[in-house]
Image 1 (cartoon, rainbow, N blue to C red):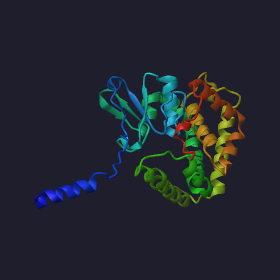
Image 2: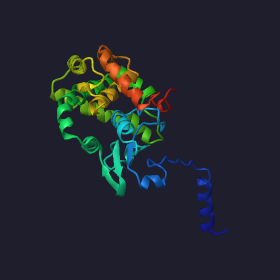
Image 3: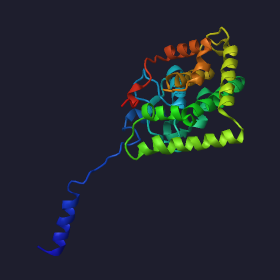
Amino acid sequence: MSSLTKISSFYRSIFKNFPLITFESPYPAVNEELKTKPVLYVSNWNGDPTSESMDLESLQWQTWVKLYDPEIILLNVSNHASPDQNTPFLEIVFHKVVLKNGLLLHLVNDEQMLQIIAPWMSLLTGPIHVALNYSMYLDEANFRELQNHWFTKATWPLSLIRTIAQPLEKKKQLRILTEEKNLDADTIFEDAARAFSSLSDLLSNGAYFFNGDAPSILDISLFSYAEMILHLPLKNDQLRLSLTSNKNLLDLANRVRALAGYSSYGSVLLDDE
């Protein structure tokens, strides 16, 4: 046997039982219908039409599509499938893509209504969003609970990105924000409580904001925040208490949930081990 053959045999023996790790593709399987219909790509969703995504913005637009644009196909993907690493995003026929920041104008397409609700939406995307992120990432007891029971499972090395790298980046951004605005925990949660109270006053006895007959994007956004806050496994639940002290907001969230036909919160994705 030649020396070259011996070397070749040696390497074959080494790699014969070498552990092969396969990674799940972030893209959905090929489907002919995807070529002819728009597709909204969401994340942290188990694919069940009656289940809610566990991602805030994905749940918001998943619900909008279910109520107002059911021709749009919903598909669950990793963030890595997005052109800018953010979900949700919309792929229109002929491969035109609307990224997350453009979905509001593209899907709602009612400038007058958007101007009316803008100050109220800012209560959700401002103080309430900051308090939610603070509860999730800067409260250490809550963060440990989320690592154990909330952040979704993934194949290595995505598991490191989802449970370590992304949370660390969130923490860094929040610390910069709180230092720049001189915010402490008490101020953050007080601002969120006032925001919920203002939204409750706006809703008053109506079924939906501004006495609407059907939920607007403001109602759907409130619903999405409420679902996250109510379902997150938070040991320190100050934000949840601020929400639940406003019964009319909970009633609104229940109406939207029932109207969208949700019956579960995507528990398939939870890590309960």
